[in-house]
Length: 114
Ligand SMILES: [Zn+2]
View 1 (spheres, rainbow, N blue to C red):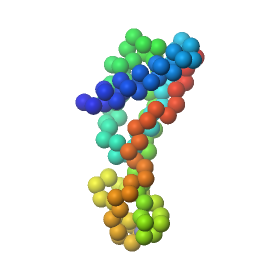
View 2 (view 1 turned 30 degrees about the vertical axis):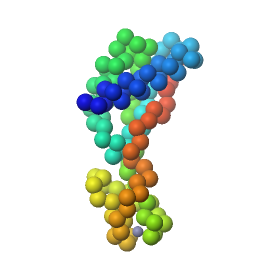
View 3 (view 1 turned 135 degrees about the vertical axis):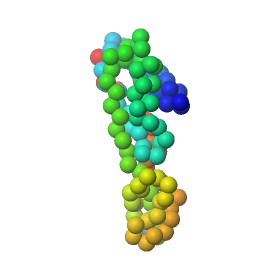
View 4 (view 1 turned 90 degrees about the horizontal axis):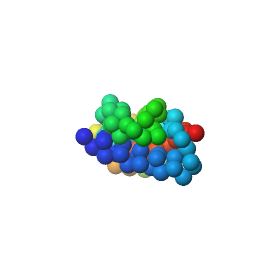
């Protein structure tokens, strides 16, 4: 389950920030996860519980913001939404595009602490 590894790095970064800012407690952590990031939100939540145990972030709320997948069609010079992720054909001209513009995000977006 690679979600544990991902969450460990994310929480390490959070705790670094908490230390730098002299925070006593982390209240909320917001992650941005792309639809094609290959991460299970359920596994992520489980990993979060495990990784934050006995840390400043033990009582923090985890918010996961999903980012829809979008690809770019060079022929139409337009972005289009990608469903499911496997096939990225432009809905206007039908050309296939390998130019994914968003949907693989896996990032720490916001930390609230005090
Ligand atoms: Zn097109």
